Length: 305
Image (tube, rainbow, N blue to C red; front, side, top):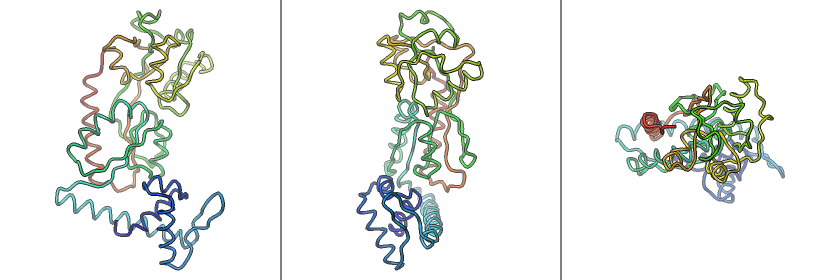
């Protein structure tokens, strides 16, 4: 970076938090404060108004942010174009993935990608779909891969995988022998659900609305933020759940759990999302290609239900 102080300033200005900026930049908070103080001394003016609970940009700070964003963007374009000419791909790449994708897709993609581009420094954030979309919107990450709908028109959404949600139950459960089931039958059993904000839960709720079924009709006994926790609870006989077929490969192969399709089925898509106007680095372009290819191959080898 041509001027580290501008990068630090732009991050603080975007997040309006020294603590969050320090986390995003992998710096200590005193180091962030020192960089901002140096920039303020350089311009001989305050760039932020500080109160006990929050900070805001001064009029001068707002002006500096406008130029800083332009300078950083142009620097990144220059750096990317030079590296494209020389065939050199390196630098940081901030990736976010929703929980299901982060646990079952991303490791395979990143392993292959990192072997080919060892100089790219990957940082991965895993959260539920709402959290990842929020990070993309705030430029905290370069690209997200999510399992839920994306409504922000300022984000590019590219479908990379077609998924199906299945009823998950113990192998000795009364639903286990059925070729198909319906949502009304599932209502009869204790249900283990994903947390609010989860893409899986949002898709399930939309499915139920279309079939005039209220989520309150479910006997939800537990909520978890991870498919692994849900599968453990189902294996223990605590209830049934509805999960992505992508999370079930190991259990279906070992026959430790049973997955029963719903009728009509619950279909959804996994999507790559990134800011529409943001300049894309070469490292990000290569990652997008890897993600597309990986999901296309995986789509052809989905586990049998």
